[in-house]
Length: 128
Image (cartoon, rainbow, N blue to C red; front, side, top):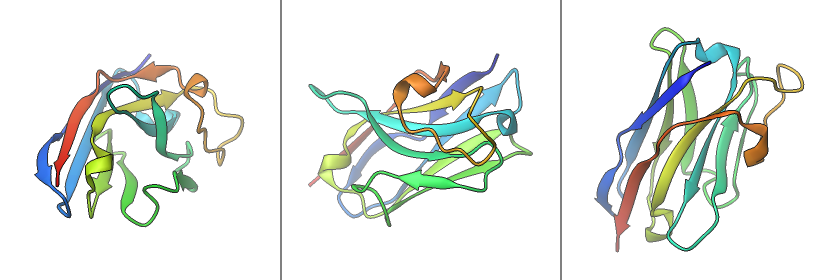
């Protein structure tokens, strides 16, 4: 199984950029479809973005489309989330997750139950 550790969160002003990292150990990330989710206080965890196992497909929530970008460095075995033009409503704990058995290599999972492994989360706070 894979272990996931997020980092890179922090407090930023609206309009700023931030890059989150998700370092994997135990298995190579290219074995999994990968995703990012977030959970704001008092709200349910929501899908942010995900990437297919072979890296060929990705998908984004409408709320972050055009501002966020998911990427993966197979050499470093690390998943990234580049976040630009941050808004106060992006404030949440961000989690990376791994799906060990996607339907096919280009499949992009988007539902929480699709994912088998989760990191502990990293806090992102965007001030207005």
